[in-house]
Length: 170
Image (cartoon, rainbow, N blue to C red; front, side, top):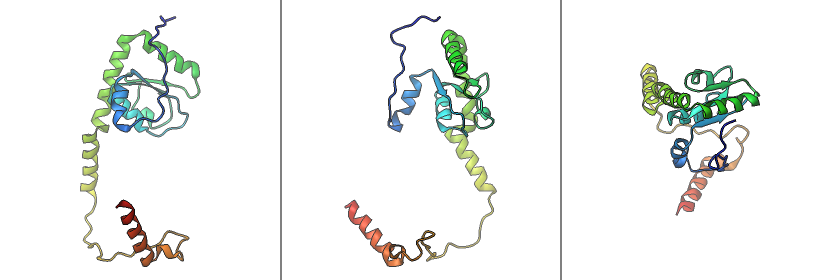
């Protein structure tokens, strides 16, 4: 059994400001994500981008597209002992942990960094057909479904709501 040190503890921080997330992630070695259903979590990408090693559920899609055995550890769904063993393995093997930290960070940047995502959006926009239709000067604004007869969604009602919002800001 590994040596137990007084500085090893679990702390539940509750809600934190988003500006503090990079520092928080940088202070940790491992992201434990035990969801039994996920797409591709932003928290996973952010953690890996900071060099945090993911210990995550091995799901059919999403997570598998980013995490593999070299840059993190995949654990079968609901395998509580598997999560524990993965954490113990990384704790006891700091060389493996250091390698996985480097690989976690380098594996997400080519596809999921801000610049990579911006490039992908720009490529998508460049492929989109350009519409020659001009934007109308007064586009029709329709009320939400089921609220067609609600006076607050009439032209006058919208004006009153906007004026109220303007006065609340002052």
